[in-house]
Image (tube, rainbow, N blue to C red; front, side, top):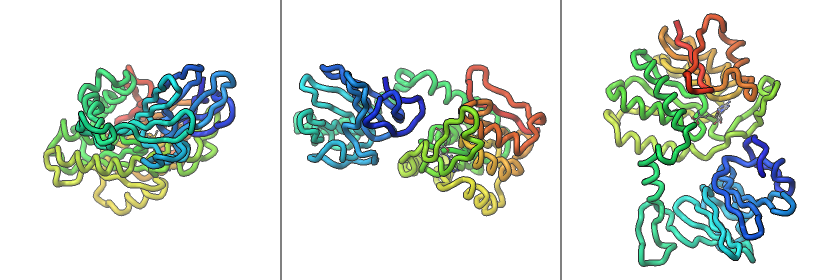
Length: 354
Ligand SMILES: C[S@@+](CC[C@H](N)C(=O)[O-])C[C@H]1O[C@@H](n2cnc3c(N)ncnc32)[C@H](O)[C@@H]1O
C-alpha cells in the first residue's frame, strides 16, 4: 500500500507505492479508509488517501525534536512517531516519546494531550499533560523476548556467537557502521557479561552519524540500492548518553570501553590507526554496506589483526549491496579466507584469520 522497499523520504503528492518511507511502525485507518503511517525514521506521520492512493505528510517537518504545539502539524518536530490512532471525528493521535500528540482533523493544528516528556509514571489524578507516561517502554524492554521480532533476536544471538569466537583473542573490537547502535552496544554488553575484567579490549564504533557520506559506482552496480544520505540517524548524542549509563553499570566502569568516532570513515579510520599505535583488532565487523569505507577499513585494520582474529561482514554476496563484496575482492585474497556463516542467519559471513 505504501513504500518502494527502499528506505528514505520521498513521494509526497504522488502514488504511495512509489514513495519512500523509513522504518514505518504503527498504522491506523480512519472512517473513510485513509491510511495513517507512523513513519518513524522520517519523524513524520504520512497519510495515504483511500480513493486516490496519494501519499502526503500530515505531521512532522522531518526534523527530530519536540516543537510546534499550537501550529500546523506539518511544521512541528516529532521525535519518535511510532503509534498512530484516530478517533471517530478523524482527529489523529501520535505516540511520540513519552507524549501523545493530537492533530486536529479540521484545522491540522498539533497539540500535546498527554505526557510531560519524562519516562517515569507520575501524575494520575492530575492534568494529563503534566503526567509521565513512558514506563510502558521500560516494562516492554524488561520483557523484550515477548515483543521483539524473531529477526532482531536472531541478530543479537548472531553477535553472541561471533563474540564467543574472540574471547581468547587479544585485541579490540572495531564496528564499522554504528547507525543506531545495535551491534556496537551488543558488543559492549557482551564484553561486560562475558569478560568483565578484560579492560584493554575496547570497542570502537565508526560512523558518519549522518548517513552514507557518498556512494560509489561499485555500490550502484547490479541491484545496488545505496543512495547518499541513506541511514541518516540522530543516534549520536543518545548513544553517548547510553554509554555513560552503561559505564555506571559495569565492572571497571571508570575505564573507558566504548568510543565512537564520528565522521567519514574513509578519513577517520586512517587517522585513528595512525594515532593509536598500540591498536590490535580481534574483531573487525564490517557493516558500512559500501565499497569505499569497507576497502579503507580492510586496508588499514587487517594488518592489526592477529591470527585467530575474526573478520566479519554483514552484506557479502548480497545483490543489494555489491560494494561490500567488491571491497573484499579488491583487498584480500578471497580463496585464502574460509568465509563461514551461522546456520540460521542469512547475513553475517565471517572468517577466522590464520
Ligand atoms: C547498515 S548501517 C550499520 C548498522 C549497524 N551495524 C547496526 O548495528 O544497526 C550502515 C552505517 O554505515 C555508515 N556509513 C556508511 N558509509 C560510511 C562512511 N564512509 N563513513 C562513516 N559511516 C559510514 C552509515 O552512516 C550507516 O549508519
